[in-house]
Image (cartoon, each protein chain N blue to C red):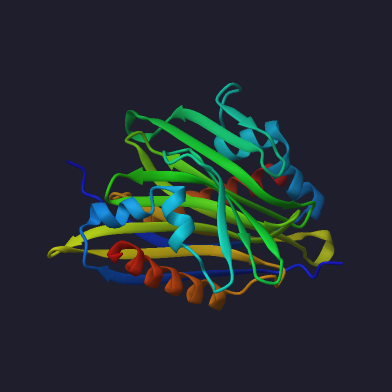
Length: 152
Length: 149
């Protein structure tokens, strides 16, 4: 019997990259690129089943953890402004059980010769399956990996 | 040239209605009930497919002469307990906001229901979501209360 609860939480992260907004935006614009750098934790893989990069387009990915757990991330691109902004909505599930529903906005702002990336996630954590702290750690790791991916 | 910006805001509204949880839940789940209290819309302007993965769509004349469009998707439904959905809305000039909403229902004394309505939103390109959307949602829940009386 599931102990039902909902925790609402938000996080904000900023990171500067020594590449123009278009280059940073490009790393968010393809399933191939994302599957290389957008890994929240070691030992995990992210694989895309659907990636329709346009407003209203579907985004469905599988998060595989090193202990064998598999979460499906099922969402939609709500708004895309090329080289400037991406907004998405999504729910992560473990089978039929919802784990997390979220709203993500990423802004790509020019700064000198580089890019200031501003990331915000708001969401609902269901029934104790996941925690806000995991998302903060996960996004921090991803934004670090993104730096290496762009620089490579 | 549009000035690009994003504002984020979370708010929650609480109400107590003098009817049982299943009646409040039904107001959200039933297409013609929802159409009346939420939008006051004519048939044809609104469709509701109330299931996980289903959508709600509204298209009607908006304030200021444009067309108001709303597209919502249901993420989680627990009968008489909780509803979670996400939506985009457009006030007539392109996507104005992206929001995640949760509705929680709990028993109140004397057979009534406590409702907690939480919205986490991102409002785009100058739309003053924190001001307009919260006021709009407050009116929405007042109309729900009137429909249940």
